[in-house]
Image (cartoon, rainbow, N blue to C red; front, side, top):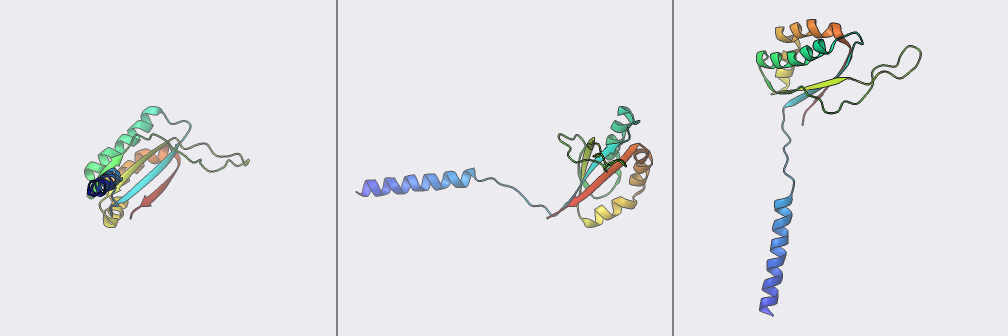
Length: 136
């Protein structure tokens, strides 16, 4: 009987350990992530579009407080504004994300000379874009 109880306890402990070891571990950082979806103008070239996305990398090098960037979208959802005749807008073409250390870094980015310079080259080829900032 003692062996049976000891065996049952051992099996229960092993199962509990398996559950704990198999638990998904994740973080909830306090950084700010900005996700931007872009609808390119129809007459923009692939080279212009790629240069715009690569420009995010250059901004990250220049703007204090940018921690990480993502410039290769795997899936982009959503549509641009409906057309004047009521047809649905075109699907967004591209997306990128920037992670900021904190709200102050995200605020500084808006008026930073590198961001303003990036806007000069990218705004002319963007039909529209939507931005979302997310934190915990």
